[in-house]
Image 1 (cartoon, rainbow, N blue to C red):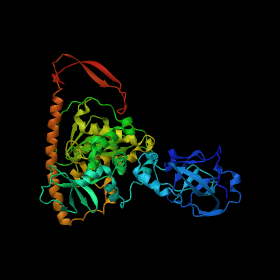
Image 2 (image 1 turned 45 degrees about the vertical axis):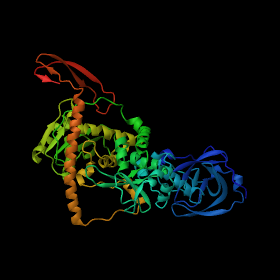
Image 3 (image 1 turned 180 degrees about the horizontal axis):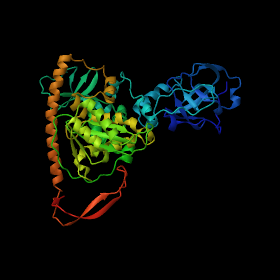
Image 4 (image 1 turned 30 degrees about the vertical axis):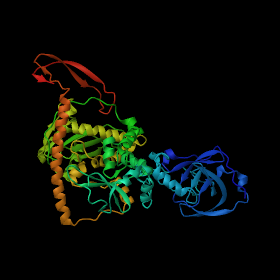
Length: 557
């Protein structure tokens, strides 16, 4: 039988990567390049009939193909030479006149299993923003545009779990881990040199896997960091930085998230270089700006005793009609919340605030700016009913509520990075992005907001990865021991968090005071007042007006 000859037909179907978000790869056939759909649920590769010369189908044998709707259809089958990444293989493909893609590669393609390895080890393969799980459309209906797959669904369904059995072998063969193997101090809990003092950090082998063991200087708790071979490091960075539940946070947050579970030689430089070269971060992050004046507030010791509250928007109207978001941050734990809103009326703000109160209790103080929604009679009556003290910032001086204002900037930056092509679903991204912030240690407290509130670290994507390479979770404790340990840990974390906050506040004050200058005014002195005139807080180019005023009372800036 003659090998099929491919020709370029004007109305041949084109790849729909930008619409459907499917796994597609470029393959070469007879000198031409085509986008092929890779489908793990298909065991018979197929090609569109428009790409096959009609004479090549003469006397071809038939093959039965079960379509997605269950019907079995006979299609001609013929061999075609397909080249991918320098490797060429002859593959028998079914010729389908109604295929929605130029070529569908199933499990009978010789390079299919090797491609799965590329997906785990080579993060540059394909377009990660469009990765998803594909199902071949082999029906006999007329070709229709593929049903769009949301970016949120495709990102969460991405196959990032590698094989567990190959991990110890990869560790032993990695040249960058050779020195670590040479410095191993214990194997399965048994010290190799008991007569020598054990100092942190040190390397250990547990169940054939290499770890780095460190000890926290404050809690004195040991942390085991799984040593990662070179082939899996960039994939880990994608999970720790570019994943929706990672949020494109900065270098420090990404490094802390990784080093809580993993380690490899040169991790600091790798994370710095990868974060610096991240495309989304370069497009969205603002340039460095001078620090705003600091005014330290009294520190809080009880979670959700004082919360800061603010509104962001208007944003693009989402598919569910949301244009704003109510942002709340706890001053004790730095735990953030965000609720999408259709309007910023007092009623909608009060309803969103009551959702938070139903979960964490009634706060004693709420710090807001002097926005209309926060100054309304409805909000004042709600505060009086619940015994909440209202604290307001000065006009045009949001620095008083700097904790919330800084989180607003972080949240808006994270949203822009994930909704560049899906702006109408920004409200669906709030929950995974909030998880990203809650999971990493906060600079002032030294602990993650989640841990300060719940007394434990959340199980995130990186924990799932680690459990995949290990033998499973550790043994659980009984209920009484768990409660006792949790009480002790919460007490310790609260004390350490307060100490870290005091140190951070003192450090920030000293840093600010080096460039601060106290200015005083006398009654009758002419001054200029800066009044922003833009109606949108998110507008990058804010129009400003300087107006002349007379100081009518002793004041200082």
